Structures are given as structure tokens and as C-alpha cells.
Amino acid sequence: MSLKDDALPALSNDFVPPIVCGTADLTTFAYQGNGYDALMERIGRSCIGNPPMLEDTARDYDTAIAAQLAFRRAEGLNLLDAALATSQIYRVAPPSCDTPFDTGTSPGALLRVLALVGPGDLMANTPLDFLTNYLNVRLDLLYVLPDRPLPRVIPDHDVAFFALGDADPASLARLRWLYAVWPRPALNNPRFLPALERDTLSHSLAGVPGLCSPTTAAVTREDLDAHLYTGRRIEGFDAGRIPYPCLIRPLASHAGNGLARVQTPNELADYLRFSFERHFFVTAFEEYAGQDGLYRKSRVAFIDRQPFLCHMAISSNWMVHYLNAGMTESADKRAEEARAMAAFDHGFARRHAAAFDALHERLGFDYYSIDCAETRDGRLLVFEADAAAIVHLMDPPDLFPYKQPPMHRVFSAFGDLLRRQAGLAGPSNPARGAVNPSGCRSPTKRRRG
Image (tube, rainbow, N blue to C red; front, side, top):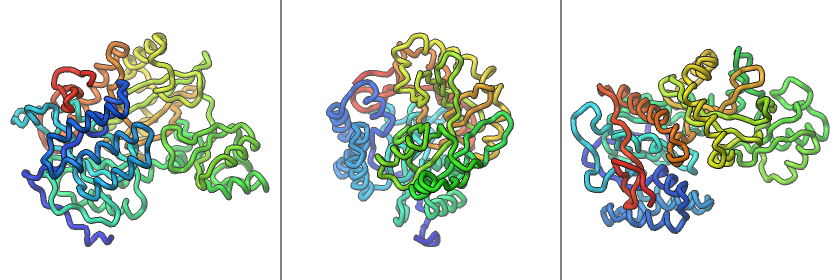
């Protein structure tokens, strides 16, 4: 679709899209141990708040999320397509059924945020509601769909956030044009999205003092076959062969899906034998275990260049994910994470301030995050940078009480960023709570549905 055909929508204070539970609400509910049937009951209750003509659309949208949370990805994406065929705009459910939003005029009053998002799975866009659910924010989601114009009318808003985590060249050109001409202040310029690609980021950070971003190359199956059977050099690596051990993963994978460490050419050949993929990233493996043999990986969010430690996972496995690191089962690991969060500003952040600055020079987003560690010689080891990683406060407060203050600092800083960009004075409203069984967020405390 030509950019000249992509007219900007009219802004309306009266437009009300389908109201949905959204990703953060349903993910939190599932994280508390509720299965698919309980998710569907929750969705059914929440849809009643919509006008009859919008109930089915809202239900399809939320069911698409529930299906993905139940590891039924194809079904979820089909349901999302059905919902988007009816509506390109959704409103995340308000904090209370009785008083939809605090629309007062105080500095902490309602902030209207419009997120421009794209189709795809739960990792396709910045999951803003994990942040805004703790603020007095009305969050609307506008889907920018390939080969389909924007709606003629959308809700008016104070600030827009370009939340797509990735884009093909045609979509990127469209997003850059929309960002340049958008009628309201906007955050997260999409022109930086290409810099997040693993190979691009690795190349751009090569040689930065105090920073380690292991060599990464995008390769085809044919490239790897030629390397294995003829000894051809892999473009992007200095040596005549891939430095073993190395990491391999499908090109578009996230969250460790399809990721493996291969120690020898034979192991690489075995990996390819059991994969149907045609395109991969290959990364030199940097050993980063501590002296105790444990691996530590941190997620650091940057809000207007200010760093915040959102979690630190500790594992005996090099492939560290917070959910499988055993943090819930280990008081010692939680105690170490608590110490890391308490000391972050004067410890980790200060040690790596120059490396953070180098990242900001290459990634000009207003909000993004990195997964990182420290090498054995003290450098910042960057695994990936992402505009769509989840930052959350879903962990049980009785086991993780130390997370409450630092994560509320994250939410407040994000709210302040939104308000500054919108030209509104005053700090953001503090936490407004999570979700109660009716499908609306309680302004006082988190409840189990």
C-alpha cells in the first residue's frame, strides 16, 4: 500500500472501541496457576461490559491471548485475525467496573495513551499494559495491518507509543512515515528497529570498551551445509570456521525457542538434521559462569536512558530464563536477587555506565530493555536488546517482597516519561493495582480470581 494512500485517522473523544482484558491481565491470571477454562470464564465475564455488537469481537481478541497462553499458538493467531477483521482498535479494561477511569484534572489524572501495534504472537509488541496497569492510564491499542489502511476514526489521546517490536522493510517505511506525521506526541521512534537485529547489534557494538556482544551472523541452511561439508567460512566470523562452542537458533525465534549450544561440527550437523528451519542466527558462545559455577542473567529496562534492574535470574544452566531458574524454590537465590536490586544504582549501573551510553548511541528508543550479564573479566555481556520484552510484577509478593519498591519505581518512571512527552506537568499516579475476579483491576490490592 502506497504511503500517499494511508490517510491519518480523525481523532474523536466519543469513539469507544471493544474493551478487553488484555495481555497483562490474562497473563497474570494464568501465572497465578489458572488454566484455560478459568481464563475463558474470566473472559466471558469481562465481555459483558461491552455493547452487544462488540462482545464477540472482544471475546475473540482475549481468547486469542488465552489460547497462546495455553500453548495453542496457531489457534490463537487465527482468533486474532478474526478479531482484527472486525476491529483494529481495542481498549484495555479499566481499573474498576464502577468508575472506569479517574478523569480528574489533578497532575496525576487520567493519561490517554494510544499504542500502535502489529499482528503476531504475544512477543510481537511492547506489552505496555504490564506497565500502564499500575498507572492512571487509559490504554488503547491500534493495530497497523499490512495492506490495510488505518481506521477513519480513532480515540483521541495525549501521547502515542510505537510499540511494534519488529517490522519488515515495507512496514518499517510506513511506521517511520506515521511517526513523523502523527498528530499527537509520540514515543519510540521505529527507525531504530533494524538496530535490534542480533547480527546488526553485535556488529555495531564490536570493539566498544567494557562491553561484550559476541559475534553473531545471520546464515542460511545452505551456508551451514557448505561450512560442514566443504569447510567454507561463515561470513561475519573472522576465523575460517565457526568458533566452537557456538549458539544456534532460528532467525525469528524468541525466549529460547530452538536455541541450542553446539560444541562440535557433528553437534551442529545433528541440530540441522532435526530442524525444519531455513534461516538461523549463529553466535559465538561466551562463557559467563561465576566462580561458583552459576550463571546470572539480568533484565535491565531503560526509560529515557535511565537504567532499572527488573530481575536477575540465577541458574546452573547457561540458558537462563527466570521461569526455569528455580527462583521460587530457592531462598538463597531470591536473597541474592534482592541484594542485586538494592545495590543496582551504585553497583552494576555505575560499573557499566559507559557501556550503557554506547547502547543509547545506537538505540535511540525512549524505552527498551536488554538481557545481559557480566563476563569473567568484568565487561557487560549483552545477549539481546528488545523493544518488546516483558517487564512485570507478577511474582508472588509473599516470596518476592523486595521487588515491590524497585518495580513501582519502574512504573512511575514510565508514567513520568509518558506525561513529559504529552506535555503534562506533575508526576504520574502511583500503582493502582492488578485484577479482581470480575475482570476489572482493583485499585487497592491484587486478588486471585
